[in-house]
Length: 298
Image 1 (cartoon, rainbow, N blue to C red):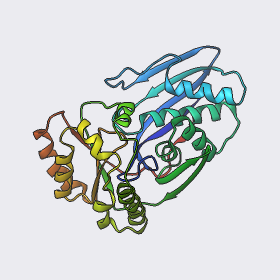
Image 2 (cartoon, rainbow, N blue to C red):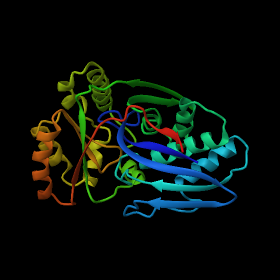
Image 3 (cartoon, rainbow, N blue to C red):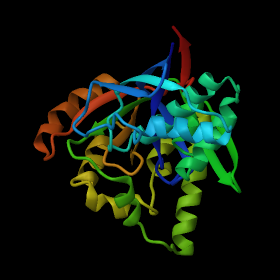
Image 4 (spheres, rainbow, N blue to C red):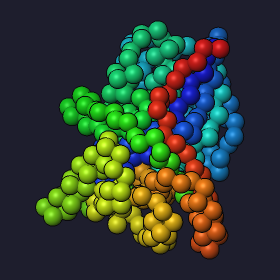
């Protein structure tokens, strides 16, 4: 018996669409036990969406895919899934399930793949690397998946930074949020985003957080998705006025994230503002998860 612990992630950070992501210290925990045959899945802390307890469960589907690749029969399993990561909120809940499934299968089978190998497998499954890589490896990451080969760089964050998650009551489908983005961009938009993505990475690595307000601007996805997140622009404006160094839409949304240095001051002001909005927004202050997903023997 063992437990797998996987962090939430934020991706598409500002201009870093499909390439820049970060692990956050909110975790899903899955306890794994081999049984004689079949599948048992127990969900604890259920959220407002139904999480499958049969073969359609994403963790189990990932385990099955892993065992197909190594050409072995899958053992009987009992999974106890304790979810703290909000689902359908742009915080990497799907990537957390895929990461958990890969780690579970790797541990059960004894094949001993490295986390980097698992991250490549996960990026191929997801189709983009910016959630799965930080979920498995931790920290802030910029990554590229090319011809099914993963290229990535992890880099440290300024230790004084915290992250204010602004989470509304409504869900948002990744597929729907992706479909709203135009298929083509102009040269000017390409320059706008690539210059800011470079500035974002340089600002984080050097600790020049005063650059983040500009560095987290984007024209690829956030302006188009703002119609799916009511009052997003207003919240961005207020967060910056309360001292946030930068703000961005997390993943496909609808969660918004403010990068902050003084959680107490920011929280006191934002907690007064959020009740004036629709959709029951709530605030959660987190840090970056530095180590990513882990396996703990019981």
